[in-house]
Length: 91
Image (cartoon, rainbow, N blue to C red; front, side):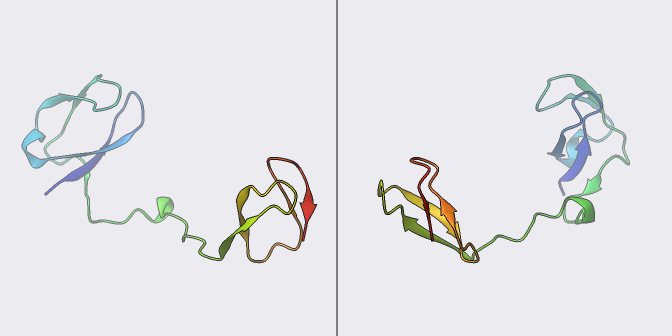
C-alpha cells in the first residue's frame, strides 16, 4: 500500500511504495537522498485535516464583456464586475 512521506530537504510530500521501506531513495522532486524508516510515512488513505482541499465553487458563470466581448468567469454573487482585458465595469 502506498504511503506518504515528506522530504527533509525540499519539504515536498510524495507517495512511495512499501518496497522502499528501510532503504535510501532519492526524492522525486529535488533528487536528494532520503533515508526511509521501516515505520516511516502515513498510509495514503488517511486524510490530512489541515490540507483538505477547499470545496469547488460551482456558483460561477461565464459571461461576455459588453464592450470587448471577451469571455470571463464571474461569481454568481457579484454585483459589479471589471473586465480583466479592457477594464470596463458592468453589472
